[in-house]
Each structure stands twice: as structure tokens, then as C-alpha cells.
Image 1 (cartoon, rainbow, N blue to C red):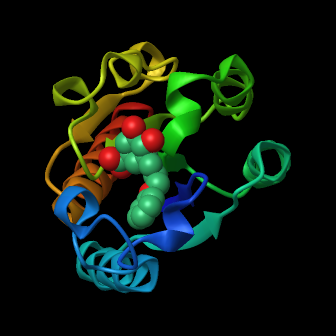
Image 2 (cartoon, rainbow, N blue to C red; image 1 turned 180 degrees about the vertical axis):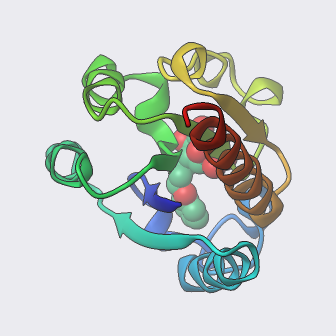
Length: 150
Ligand code: CA2
């Protein structure tokens, strides 16, 4: 399976600020851990981060043909963007939503996600482990689904 990992706005700052909320790992550390996990489970992975919503939408439109699923930390866009939901749906590929922190235990404006209802699953609150669990679960889901389709 080939999975695209998308990191939303400001996640490039990971490990540099607010370590009490988001931990000390950098985005490069997260990507390295995912690369290692992908090798372990025999999956392929590619990464994308942007602070610009339009660039994320363009990327989603571009990967449609080459990936089987999308793992996304939408960051703040998850709470605000119907366009991001539409972009994910337009890929016609299953996606999983992950968050480092648990948005449900934070400010009320973080409680709503435009993506969650359309996601295969959501993992939140476990720091880098949210990404790793989300990746493993999404890969298992895609493998099972491809077997069932044959
Ligand atoms: O917990 C998460 O992963 C979030 O998606 C992170 C978003 C936040 O808006 C969501 O509610 C939950 C914020 C991403 C910004 O990341 C930073 C990392 C380090 C320093 C500053 C921002």
C-alpha cells in the first residue's frame, strides 16, 4: 500500500515551541519514525507539509492516482475547512485523521472537526504515537479492503 502523510499548517514548528502540548519531536523525527514503520509493515509512504491551504488542496488533487490512502494531521484546518474535507473526498481514497494533542480536551473551538465524520478513523492525544497508530491502522484497513475486493 502507498500512503500519503499530510501535515497541516504550522506543524513545521513541531519541537520548537509548546513542547508541553505537542512534545519535543520535530516533524523530521515524525517522518523518520513513519518511514521506519512503513518499512516494517511493507508499505510505501510519501510526505507533504504546507502552511498554505491551497497548496495542500493542490497536493491532494495530484496524488489521487498514485496513493491508496491518506494519513492527515489537518492541524487548525480540521476545525475550519470545508474545502479540505472536499479535497480529501475528491481523492476517493480512504483517509485517517490524527492529532498529537487531544483537541476534545482543549478549547471548545477545537472540538469540531470537519473531517472526522468522513474519516475511516481518528487517533488523537498520543503525540507521535497518534501518527504511528493511525498509520498502522490505516494500512491494515487498506490491506484488508484490497483483499476483500478480489
Ligand atoms: O494536536 C494536533 O495535532 C493539532 O492538530 C495541532 C494543531 C491544532 O490547531 C489542533 O487543534 C490540534 C496546531 C498545529 C501547530 O503546531 C505547532 C507545533 C509546535 C509549535 C507551534 C505550533
